[in-house]
Structures are given as C-alpha cells and as structure tokens.
Length: 328
Ligand SMILES: [Zn+2]
View: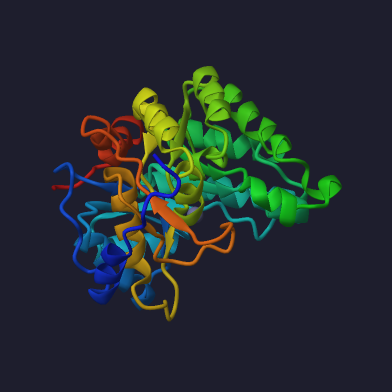
C-alpha cells in the first residue's frame, strides 16, 4: 500500500458529525465479544454499554472489583465479569495471598471465568513484584483448581521504553518483561493466559509468533486502540498474515474504560475505529488523539478475511474460556 495514499478525511468528518453513532455495515454477521473493557458499577458505565450495544457487541467484559462486576451483571446481562486481583495488601504477604485466594474462589462460584492481573513495568518498578513471584503461586493454584483463565498485562509500547521507562535498573528492558509470562505459561499449561494488547508487542509479530508456537496456552487480545492501530497499521499485510495464521489464538478486545465525564463520542468513536480497522482497508485520519504517534495518527485498516473475523470476534472466547457469546 503506498504510504502517500490519500486519506479519506470525508469519511471521518461524516462519522464525527453523526457522533460515530451510525456503525458501518458489518463485514460478518456474528456475535461479538469485547473481552477487554473496564467499568465500575453505577451510572458511569451506562454510555459504554450503550455504545457497545449500538455496535453489536453481544458480550462485554467488565474488568473491575468482583462486587462492581456483580452489580453490572445484574443491570446488564451481557456483562462478562473479569474481577481483578487486589493488590492493596501487597505489603502484608499473608493477607495478600489469603484475600486473593478467597477472591478467586468467590469469583468462580459467582460464574467468573477469567481473573485479571496487571504487571505493567510501572507496577513492577513500584512494587518489585512480577507475575512469576512465588507469592502468587497459591493464587495460580486456586485459579487452576477452578478451571479459570487469566488476563494479564505484561508490557508496554517500545516507544515508552525509550521515553518513559528510561531507568533500566528500575524497569528493565522490554525483553525483561517476558520471562515472568513465560514462567507462568510453562508452570500452568492447563491455565489459558490471555496476554493483553497483542501480548504487549504488536511491534514485533515475529516475537509473538515464537511465543504462541512455544506455549499452546497463550492467547492474545487486540485491546488498546491507539497502540494497536498505530503499530499493526504500519504493517497491514504482515498483520493480516499473522491473524490468518493464529486466528485460533487471538481475541477481540478494545480496552475501553468507562470514566466519569467522558469527552463526546469517547466510546462510539473507539468502536468505530476498531470496526474499520479490522474489517476494511480504509485509510483515514485517526479520529482520536495519539500522543505516541509521529505526526498525524492514521487509521490504516488491515481488512481481515471473513473466515478469520468470527474466530477473533467470538469463537475463541467461547472455545477457550467458555464465555457465553450472546445472541447476534
Ligand atoms: Zn485494560
């Protein structure tokens, strides 16, 4: 695709004028699971759920506390509860373990299928704890006992390692973020581990291919709108080939975050971007800001084939994690 291909400015302007509230025609007719979204209970979540319904999302993950997730499920039956581990008591190891083992047990009893944990370099820099810390062994055992999966965040954009995580002694290099994931994948082959944001390495599909080939229990989600669109959009052909090859290992997710006082069209614009990015070969200005972009951020669709999209949209969520995908 020529780099100087003309941007379809008109398309974005038209969509913006409509508040991104008129979803384009879908390429495939099937359920769509958004496996990575954050929402607290209460009215703050409403506009996110509305946008998701508008865009045909039949199952929406709510990463939150278990209590909030339960409340959301009560109100929105399409909620897939993804409770996150509680890290408040990290300073008191016994309490930390006890509370989180109990959390996993209760989450399983209430019908959760996936437990969220967050080991971004920021967190590791602050706490010194990584995903393979022995402290988490009893928690992983509990997860395995109940047949649950894990959703984890282990790395960040390449560019952050140049601009943000410049203290290598504190954060390590980008490559240093991966042994923690590999150790857990190897130690718990029966636990499917979903690595968020294309495993944190959309810049290096060859690395992801290596990991997927080595660990059959590893899966990737497509979440983080700006990062994923920016990096995969730089190599649409390679990205399409990668998705074709690993279609049974990738799950659609957005990383939408329900916040108080969102800017106009926050949620609809992101669903619009995702739809065009995965389903079309549109090239247009990205309608949201991307501080990590060099120059004007661009949406360059990777146009996934019709036989690949259903795997990403719902088949893997159902098959691997047992998520009820909802009625299309
Ligand atoms: Zn997230």
